[in-house]
Length: 189
Image (cartoon, rainbow, N blue to C red; front, side, top):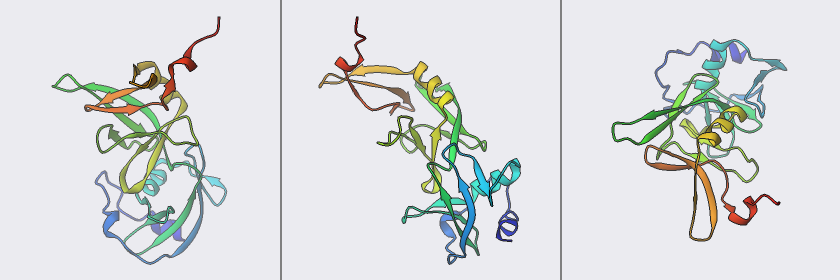
């Protein structure tokens, strides 16, 4: 079974050099990551944390928009309904400069600092932002994490009268939603 072979890859904390691995396509696995970041293999939920960690570390998104589990000798296509990872925590750190640095953590324990290279992205088809990560992957903010960040958010009005809500992290603006017209935020009396 291909999944058993994939799980033999070294799984320490060091990043895997997926960008250096270019095996031919081995086929497609019966594996789905659903809209909530839950991984399923042959209809069964992947619940063992070591297995989930290993699979997430072997995953990359290629230029064709497809997701693949990759080793030096195998490449298996899987299906992802939205984002393969889910942000479950966000922590604010204060840098020596006094600037805020937000660090987000996925359900697999992978952390990333929001900044110039790791941005919150607003998609047209979702009101909850996603975060760009390694190897073309993204992680959607979980609702509780998004609500927490909204509570911490700053707002400003631009020159066109639109309101922007977001956070500064590492000196870079991170939007938490699409800009709104100031008139749209008025509560009718």
